Image 1 (cartoon, rainbow, N blue to C red):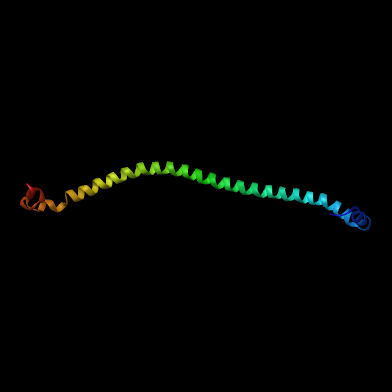
Image 2 (cartoon, one colour):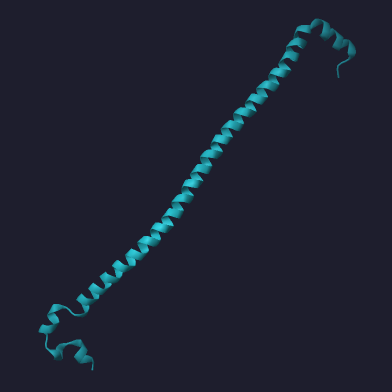
Length: 110
């Protein structure tokens, strides 16, 4: 603790420091407010960027669902046609008519 006598000595000898201190208090407050406003702007910009990224991912996800549904329907038709064509080729190849009936698998199973 400072005694009153020491305080009065500082007041008379260091009036310059008191005035500097009194002038620094509002300057510190103004700097603090400026710093907080700058931080608010920075975090607002970062929040907007993060929200935009999330929105883009959401829109791409929704669009991909519709595209996949459309592709799935078309792909099912194509695969059905391919499976039918492959089945036709594998089940009855051209050379089957050249093989006598006694050597065919269908005849030998019975």
